Image (tube, rainbow, N blue to C red; front, side, top):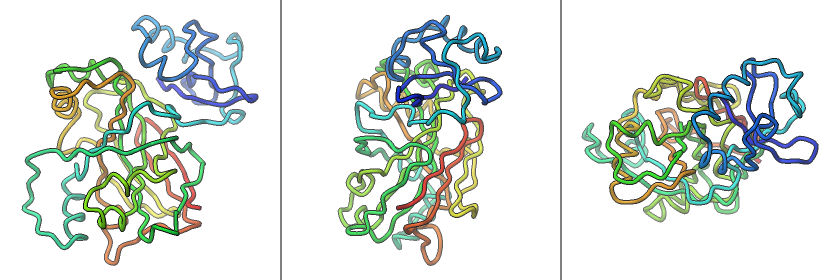
Length: 297
C-alpha cells in the first residue's frame, strides 16, 4: 500500500492511496489517529496495516474525507525529517566507474566497503516543487535518482537476515548535488545539503507491497530524455548489509531515512558533463513507487 502526506482544504493530513490510485483516504477516518507520517511509522501495528490494506481496495463513498487525487496537493512523505538523511555513495558499479572517470581517478573495479555520508534536509521538496539552482555558488548542478528506505522501528545490532523487519517502506529521493562544492571541499556534506536539494516522494510504499529485497526499475529523465535506467537489484551493498552494518555502531531511530545510492547516468557521467540549468525539468522514477517531477529554478 501507499501512504502519503497531503494538503486538502488548507489542512495537512496523512493518507492512504486507493488501489486504483484515484483517491486518497485520510487515515484518521479509517481508525488510526495519526497526525503525521512520523507518528504512523513509529506507532502503526500489523493489524492497522491490514486494515489499511483492506480499505485501499474499497469504494471511496463510505469513507469520510475521501478526496480525489486531482484535488489534493501531495507533500513529501516526511516533509521535515528529524535527522539528516543517511546516504550511500557510489553504490552501483557503473556509477562508481563514471564518478572515477569524472574525477580522473583510476578505478580498480572493486568496492570493498560502503561509503556513507549525510545530507542535511531542513525541508524536503515535494513532487512538482522547484529545485533552486543556487547559481550564485553552483556551476555544476546534478541529479541522482535513488531508492530510499524508511526505518520503521529502532534498530540496534540487527543481523542481516533481520533487516527486512526494521524497514517500514520505500520512497524516492533525488539526491541533488553541487559538484563544484562537493569537489572543492573534498567531502560531500555541503555540496549535497543546500536548501531545496532533497526532492522526495510521492509516497511511502510499504515493505510488504513488493517482494524483498526490492528489484525495481529506477530511472531519471531530464527534459523528457532518459538519463538513468537501472534496477535496484544492482546495488553493490544491499538493504540487509546497509541496515545491519549501520546498526552495529549506531541506533537507527524509527523514521530514519537512508538513501541507497544512484545508478549510472548522472550528469557527471557524460563527456562533457551534462549538468542541470534553470528551466530544466527532472523526473526521478522507481517502479512500483511512482515518480517525482521537479523543475530547476
